[in-house]
Image (cartoon, rainbow over all chains, first blue to last red; front, top):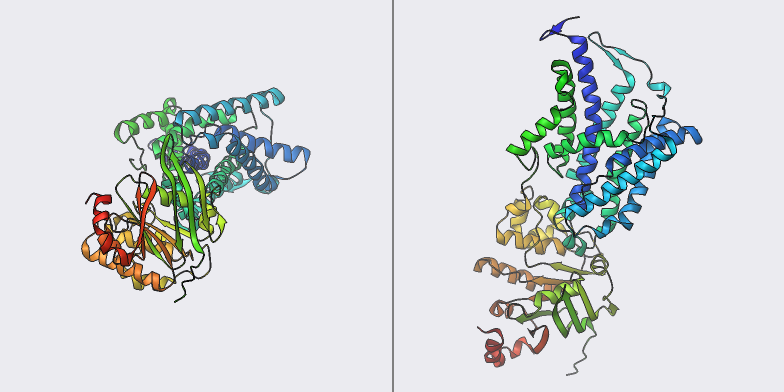
Length: 295
Length: 238
């Protein structure tokens, strides 16, 4: 055991790990928000509820269908993503030409309704979700103990985030998305079905939230308000990174998770507010966010 | 000599179009035959751009008839219209800032077989080949115009709608664009061109339609241009 700035290394590294875990969720969720905002011009306040639905979906699949965690990783994002697409087709699509405020109000209202329905049926105390057996236990790295499941969450989230970045920034499909963000009318006049692409993009962003929910289920309990607790912080992350920036969402997601973890070690009293303090400073200095482009 | 008129490739009849409350086209009618270069002339605000956009299905509301290869386009979405084989090059060029030149060039999907090969596009516009890695909007105005035309030649669309391709460009670039249009015509493309600059149009066009207040008010062939010059000056206010 050694010390860094008077802090036992063990405590430091375990807080760093917790920071990375939280950062994984921040990154996945703010990435989904960024993708959705870029394409739909909608600030998706339902995101937290969709994350919670992902966790519940994992719980249902295990409880009633006997489908394991690994199945849930695939099935839950697809099901919740489809649910999102129905919302987009029936409600959101009418709001694109209006002020952001309308989309915000609608998605916020939906989040309250979804949460209310879940609370009505499942109460507000959490339901336990067992960790998959293959990810139990951990590695002793010498300077700290690394639980396998947490390592998996960090790696999986990194892979998904970077994969998404790659598709959007480096492929033909991504070029369609970027072009349609700039000038949907012209992209459509080239023969691309932009409305369908928008629906699928929303479904994908929502699917990312549900995926985060599944990954969160074994760490936190599955509960109706798990999303609203998290989403406030995630919105701060998005503001810091810059609305609509893909890499910005990923880097600030992980970065702020780590900063939050370190704050817990060095100045625990501020750990709940540090992200908001950073947000305030960023808004003052760079209102478009660290990675945002000023319009 | 027998003059057998081929069926028009594009037939516009009684076309009305609106942007929100404002009624822009008031029953425009004209036609374009396969292989022709037809130019819409008219003052600013006469409805030329709106006509192209109405054919493409990107105005607020339209009424009347637009038939392409005998198929009615009114009521189709713009992506379906494009898939039918019509390509549009907008006045503002529409080069995407978040895409590099290569991505811009390959953005429009192939809608029909038989589009130009990439090499032929580079032969027409050698400048583009030099700058594939640049951000789209970092190109000069002339290069952006070439990119905007080049990218719709790949798609296999046989009817090209070009909205003021020479606007704001230097004379040498305008010549290059004129040369391109003549080359495309030789290769069998049909082109509907909107132009303010009828001196440029006279170097490429087979026929002209003159628009005013959202209607076609006159039509003549390129060979009749000199005879119509005085009238034309009056129409265009030049």
